[in-house]
Amino acid sequence: QVRLVESGGGLVQPGGSLRLSCAASGRIVTTYVMGWYRQAPGKQRELVAAAISDGTTNYADSVKGRFTISRDNVKNTVYLQMNSLKPEDTAVYYCNARIPRIAAENYWGQGTQVTVSS
Image (tube, rainbow, N blue to C red):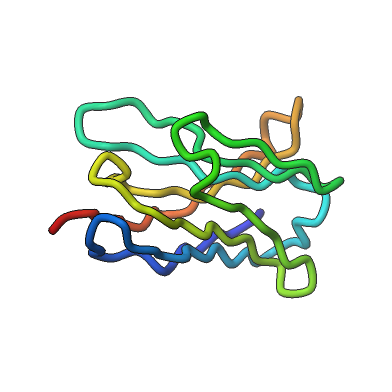
């Protein structure tokens, strides 16, 4: 079992920055695909960014150039640096850890609220 705990959400003005953290425990997640997803009210959960164990990253088009995902394998933690935040980034952000093609190895955090508003 992998337990994921997110932190770092909050209220920020448009144009501001936040850094989300996701601390994993229970297993070393070095070989897992680590991702950040978000879900806004009335919308489906969507992938924001993902980091594969080989260092490859990918991003949703809506956040490219503004968000950066990184992972610290020593701390078993993944981060999401969010810059130039927009009101449409408002959502609950969830951390995910998974091993592709192994359905049982798919874990979610409890989520952290990010609100971008003036």
